Amino acid sequence: MSGFLSDFYNLFIQRQDMLWQALWEHLQLSIISLLIAVVIAVPVGILLTRKDSIAEVIIGIAAVLQTIPSLALLGFMILFVGIGTTPAIIALTAYALLPILRNTYTGIKEVNPAIREAARGMGMNSLRSLIKVELPIALPTVMAGIRTSMVLIVGTATLAALIGAGGLGDLIMTGIQRSNNEYILLGAIPAALLALLFDGILRLTERLSKRNSYKPVVAVIGLSLAIIFVPLLAGRGAVGPDLVVGGKMGAEPEIVGNMYKHLIEEQTDLTVQVQGNLGATDFVFNALRVGDIDVYPEFSGTIVGELLALDDFSYDPDEAYQQAKEGIYDEYQFRFLEPMLYNNTYAIAVPRELAEEQGIETISDLNSVKGDWSFGFSFEFIDRQDGYAGFPERYGFELGNVTSLDVSAGFRAIESGDIEGTDVFSTDPQIVENDLLVLEDDENLFPPYQGAPLIREETLETYPEVEDILNQLAGKISEEDIQELNYLVDIEDENPSDVARDYLVELGLLDE
Image 1: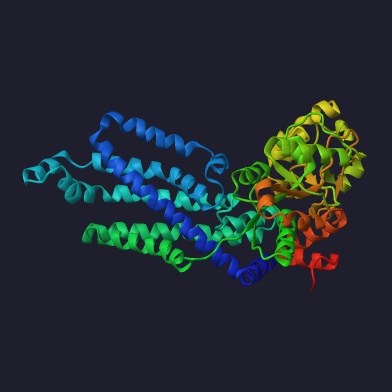
Image 2: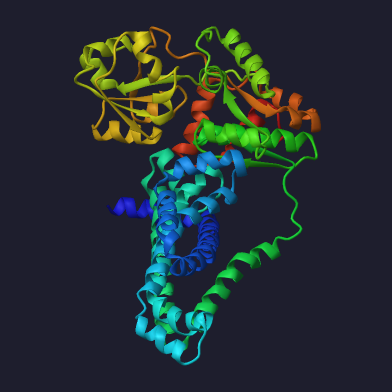
């Protein structure tokens, strides 16, 4: 335990800048979402107390919004509002509406009718009675709803990292991807403390409001607006990047994306931003479709098997690349540039010692243990035709016990003994770290996965020089090279940008 605490403390010291930046982003994201939810839900809740006939319907709609899975909502909105803080704020606001709306409605409806009558007897009209009598009495109930929404927002906001909104979720997702508990806690502990802090401030505001009317509420709103707008005013006039490079979850896309950035900025006057850890393929691809990113590293097998959903894809690397290149241009007018050397294919891995005990070397050999072993496959792998969805047809049998897991959770589950097998990429450094055996794909379930830049045609029309620059990586970077680079980032916790630059210097593509 002392070793873990020491590692956590060292990580905190080393990553303070990242932590404070993530905490500030999380704070802004949470406050903006809460204020919007309050501005919407409180007036609507008041209106519903005067329109009982539609109250149940409106509150029901708010309840339905809260039942939508957050990841599904975030992914869906990318096509309409892109990536970044906008879809995150919309989603968080939607989740926060119900507690505030319901508590506002309930708090005002429960005001004693005799008190309302007394207010009218003193000559107050409906609006004056609401402001001077009903709202002050209902305030504790309203504030309870706001506190509930605030805690909900702070927790859910960690998922916003999957669409490039930043926040403490960046640290948590990094920890999950790397199977690193210290990173997970570095994001989770501040998120929990932030929720407690907000709850305490709102609770104190509620108590003070009982004595001093609305002044404490106004003070808190003013402080919140300052937190939101002061940084915006300070950053006024800042010019955005010329190009945005996207990337899926994990170290490898971020490393390769930083290679693109260094090459482009070194050889042109363009500025490039790398936006990594954008979730699974559909998240990143949709970001490319709406123009929030200009380019990202993609694989030929993913294009033909998932994005184009071709049933007749080729297992010859050159033919598969041509299928991907021609198909993605015909369907979406995206350009798939020249591929790198390594083949980052899917694979199924099991503990080496267990495989040797059972004589398991190929995927076909799993037929002998299909009823005894458990498998944890990633969500994307399970649904893909070039993944487990195509497994029964290709191999002629199904595995007995298959569970959906996050990619990194598969490594953890193998280590704990909860499962015997998981899907991996051939370049994952955890294969070596966990002493796993990659089973031979003896029936050719997995097509070739050659990595190359997938870029918008409009981007190349605007900056035609970028094509030749990115193609400098064609035929370079072996599987051994990318495994080593992934190891430096995932296991040794080195900076992806520094790792990418050092490798390009080693290749002779950049000067020291």
